[in-house]
Image 1: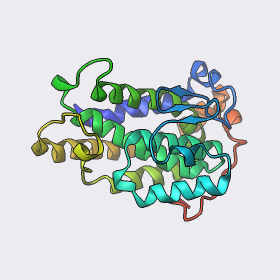
Image 2: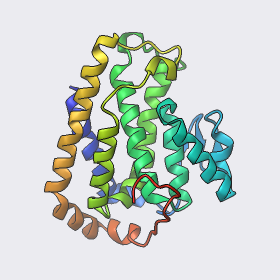
Image 3: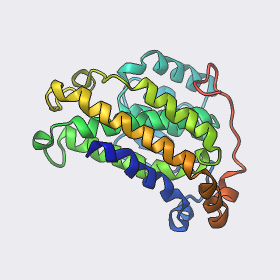
Amino acid sequence: MVTKIWLQLYFIALAFAHPAVGQSVSDPARIEVYITPYYNSEGPVVEIGRFGKGLAAKDEPEFVETILKMKQSWRELRFPEMYVAAIRLYDLGFRNESTYWFYSAQYRGRLFASLVDQEKMGSMGASAFELVQAANAFQQLVGPYINGYAFGDIDRLLQIVERVQKENKTVPELEKLYPGVTFKRKLEWTAGNGSLNEGLTKFVSILKDQKTSLKKTRIDNGTEAKFSKLTNKEFPSASIR
């Protein structure tokens, strides 16, 4: 079941290519989303704990310093923090770096959803339930922007996806990252992560095999014209160059 996740995400990633979804992106240079309680593009308002103030900063040096501090705590980052960082990196023009953060956040969000104990997840208001809903919301609302940009250079996207796969061979300390959430037995964690990680191999293969058709689809429905004018600023000590 988990092995199908990245194939499902592949089609989600392609959703940006559909005209109806493309039309929802009014300004490809700025991600306009509201995902309670973590992020509101109006402001912006960021509510993710210790890194919130720095991520919301309009002063670029302060923002860059915050991202560098987050990198130092990479294994301790929760996926909502990573998604918000990806949004802000994108808005400030660091779009290749943003893509790396987005796919890293996506991996951790999917890992969380696959390893949480579904029988003890609870419902609306419960931490586990709300986090699973947040993971879906970030993917669906932010994906059209970042994939709209990232799929313009599939060779670079492949580098990023392969790096994300390599960096996620082991499972982080989920119980420390998400206190109060009940997960499956630890004996199941390695197998679950392995299945999710292997799914990236299939995802990469599909991207390689369909590179030409993806380009044609982008051109035909106007996605290429909409996103091709976006530029990228190299982030200091960038993960992807």
